[in-house]
Length: 391
Ligand code: GLA
Image 1: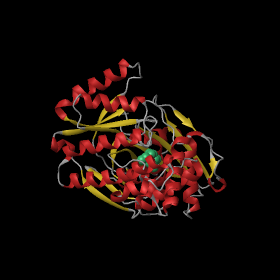
Image 2 (image 1 turned 120 degrees about the horizontal axis):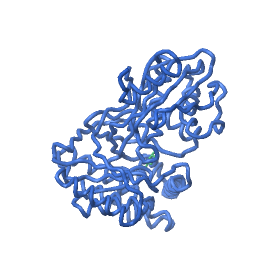
Image 3 (image 1 turned 90 degrees about the vertical axis):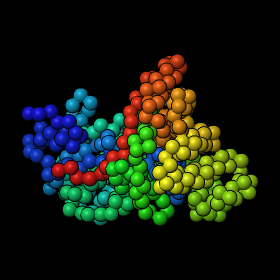
Image 4 (image 1 turned 180 degrees about the horizontal axis):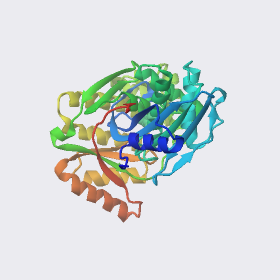
């Protein structure tokens, strides 16, 4: 037998090994990086992610007894089996650990009135680095959502599926995240970044070909852990909601950047930096999209670095490893660099002229080594396809 290489092939092969028959189908969904637009999604603002080539695949077949079984493949190829669940009985708070993600999706779809209660067998395999802030858990949830919808024969709009997945994450898993990651995984297309206005809910594809400009997006996985279920993310989200309430606007998206200074003085001091970040970050997204449309990618660099400074100093979600990644990439000739995702660890990106790749990589590795930090993992990110059916 030839060695399965893609996550989809691995999941299918593992399914057959475990269940003694081929799966009815295989669906997969990618991880993402967000080029810019951080902590704007739950403020009704703008984001600009693209999909990674790394994916999580789900091989699936229907059952008739109401039970959902889920197995996931580890790095060594071994399968870890979660306790089977009865889909009709799923209640938030009852499933713990990684199994909460697939169970939460089944719960959210059931709550939506979609026919998932007959149950299913799912086998998962993937290559999105876990805990790296590259949305491996959202890729898993999105792939499970497509698989369960596929088995149920339901065709739904991608932004709707993203909302159901968000509900599973917020209300079943208990992580108060926004909608950036699910939308990226479900709606991105190859060679494009996704300009998403969360308020309008309309995905717009913007051509993004760094190589054509002699550039690349280097991902630096700091390997510092990040956990969105912890309080830091929720506290900032609550701060933004409180600020919007005091200002009498539906969301911070509605604060006009031209009136930012006058607006900030109406707020308690602790909320001002949060608002300044969200308002200036939305503006940086719009300026980035404008530059991309004009083919002026190199000029995006200072916007990325501005985003990082704002996340570090105003929003205060960076950490030593992310700052070292950004500073050492910049010192070696990156045009711009920033942390991506929720923060407190995870990954950074750097916009790098291709001919500076080796120097930037050396500088980042040396920066980490000189501070005795765990060696980071670096790779070049190419905008890849969104979620879909593989077979
Ligand atoms: C995490 C969340 C997203 C978004 C980002 C910050 O990735 O899952 O919804 O809020 O943080 O931009």
